[in-house]
Amino acid sequence: MQPFDQSKRRFRLRMRGARRLSPAYFALVMATGIVSIASERAGFHLIAVVLLWLNTTQFVVLWVLTSWRLIRYRRALIADLTDHRSAPGFLSAVAATGVMANQFILAGALNLALGLWIFGILLWIVLTYTIFANLTIMESKPTIDQGITGAWLLAVVSTQAISLLSALLARHISQPLRLDVNFLALSMLLWGGMMYISIISLIFYRYMFFKFSPADFVPSYWINMGAMAISTLAGSTLIENAADAWFLDELLPFLKGFTIFFWAAGTWWIPLLIILVVWRHFHRRFPLRYDPAYWSAVFPLGMYTVCTYEMASAMRLEFLRPIADVFVYAALLAWTAAFIGLVKKLASNLIPALNPR
Image 1 (spheres, one colour):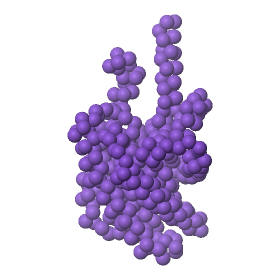
Image 2 (tube, helix red, strand yellow):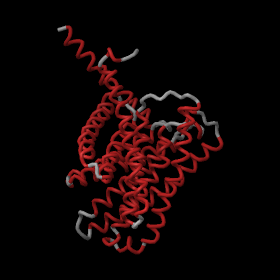
Image 3 (cartoon, one colour):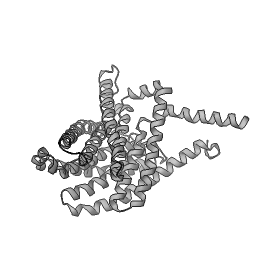
Image 4 (cartoon, one colour):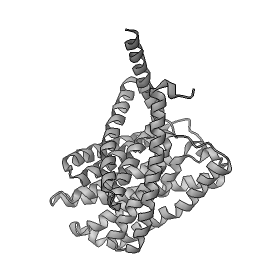
């Protein structure tokens, strides 16, 4: 009975770990899903399929843990939901749902994708207005240097994920509903653009006018680029849908101009982010060890790859394809490094002998 009791005790301890589950852990699904899609676009079909099955498992496990946290550790979840630094991380669940549905569309599982689309829209409405309303009416608030991180841009990513998914599903819906879904996709694209302008202004202000240490440069700041990359992908998809919606056809010059603007803005961020990474990890000898936040850095690399492929196709900018052909390897390398770190972390938690502590 003693070994059985010890196993039960270990199981309870593992489930108790759900109390500290990061709200942004769904970035794992976002990163794995978009790297899978990037691999498919690059011609690595086997890798894409393996990552699809892996991501389906990750998606289910994370929702089980999140549901358990809601039931068993509601106070901890509410504390995260009302904190300026952690609350935006909940929106990773919306983006993950959109990316997962995108994978199902590519796999031909349209019914699953449609169900996730409806769920994603409801989740976006509940989380967006709950988070922003709560943070608005709070009496005690942090200063901007203490309260804002790149995770705030998940508000943009989640919105554009719904825009992208709506545009993709519209291709499989008959008229006149196809017109309505394309209009929803266009509206979400513009809402996301509005939010990016507001949030990135605050982030840039924080960069320039407050003390910034290596510890302050968290991986979620890569979403500065990732938010523009997914906006590019959503815009490119709507350009390809122009024949199905008269308002998209009339707005084609606007859509093309803004899509290139999104891509150019995302591209501008890449050298600066690389410089800050080098400064953080090498110049100041900041330790490089696994952190769930690294998935927020993997996702933008995969999304930049996919959006460049899609924009090159939608706007006949074939000279941009070599950029995507290079970035797909960067995305795969970053995903592999983060996944190895995750496996080691899980192994050390599940097998006490492997834990250095």
